[in-house]
Amino acid sequence: MSQRMAALGARRRYLVLAICCAGVVIVVMDISIVNVALPSMRRDLTASVSGLQWTIDAYTLVLAGFLVLAGSSADRFGRRRVFQIGLATFGLGSLLCGLAPGIGWLIAARAVQAVGGTMLNPVAMAIVANTFTDPVERAKAIGVFGSMSGLALALGPILGGALVDGLGWRSIFWVNVPVVLAALACTALFVPESRAARARRFDPVGQTLVFVVLAGVVFAIIEAERLGWSSPIILGLLAVAALAAVGVLAYEPRRTDPLLELRLFRSVPFTSAILMALFGLCGFGAFMFVTTLYLQNVRGMAALTTGLTLIPVGGLVLVLSPFTGRLVGARGPRLPLLVAGVALAVAGVASLRLGPATPLTAVAATYLLVGLFLSTVNPPITNTAVSGMPRSMDGVAGSLASAGRQTGTTLGVAIAGTIVGSSLAHGGTAFTGAAHGIWWMMFALGLGIVVLSLLSTAPWAMHTATRAAALFEDMDRGPRTESPTPEAV
Image (cartoon, rainbow, N blue to C red; front, side):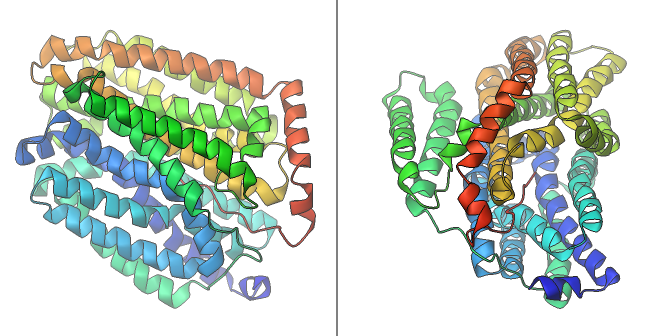
């Protein structure tokens, strides 16, 4: 299979890269593009705040829960085949989102979208890694692929705002359909099939337990505002999630190929990377949810103006992410992580001053801090996750770090809606006052990243990674070595 990949001409390889980049763009863009459309969806579908939360979290929750399963399925059944199934499923979900007659139907369609999305990002990365066999070419191709996330984040709010103002919120989903159809045709014509030499075994019990943990916690947080934290339903959900978590800890170590390789958590850098992914994207998810409501509901901005106001966030990601990647390669992850943590903490404190009439220059300056955070947090998290690990575990570690990001985003939206939900109807200073809880949370999460960045890069922490890596040496030597199951955004 590798000889076949090596035989691909340069033009064919870069065409494969372009097809895979299209996959990552539509998946990542559908995280940021929907935020701008939330107020329009709320008016058109008479949706509650929890309905808006689920519109985002149904997508990110499924992404978080099934990323690792999608990667291992592609290794077993063929990456091109799974990529095509993912495209078709994502396109169907997008079409259903655009046709949704109510908020419940929209949430269900978003889950369908996400099922397709889990088969796009990690599988596309695996296709790129196997298409470019030369190490130098592969590094450049992966760099281009990674930068597409920044491009999608930068374009998402702007494109979403233009579509919502010009054609209505449904058009943000319909625009995916022609992209999917073109990508399906090009994949069939130009993308070669590939599989792992040894695919990890399926772990249906572990998969179910992990999803029950995530879904139980997120459902409890979102619905607690309506039902109350003392509600038997909320307490029951939290109890089920706790029991499922105990089940994961008891069951997964007994598996040969567990969904969650718990031995990885013996590495302080890996554990810190997962926590930093959770902290960082929890802060960003909460920020995006609250900010789009603030700009449109409190300040009365149109959707396009809202997207343009968010340019400092996506623009900095697009410009600085490649530099961050080079800095991590040259000097390690500590400095970028410190910058990211400080930027998130300062952005939280600066946001406390945001009111209904705060000058837009001050608003933009605050958003620049968020952009600085986002552009410096992702590359070092992945680097920290795989630090000291054998190559056989790079894919698993990277995928779990990606799942941590999606879990963080999901929790951030859930928490944000719970904090500001009741104030949305009152608007103005009531909303901005309630949002102070979000900004203090961002400050605390930023400080957490600072602390973890110092811990995870200390010499003693690297020693724990070396000890953890020794547990997988047999996998690195023998036929158990598998192709990377790559990271998604």
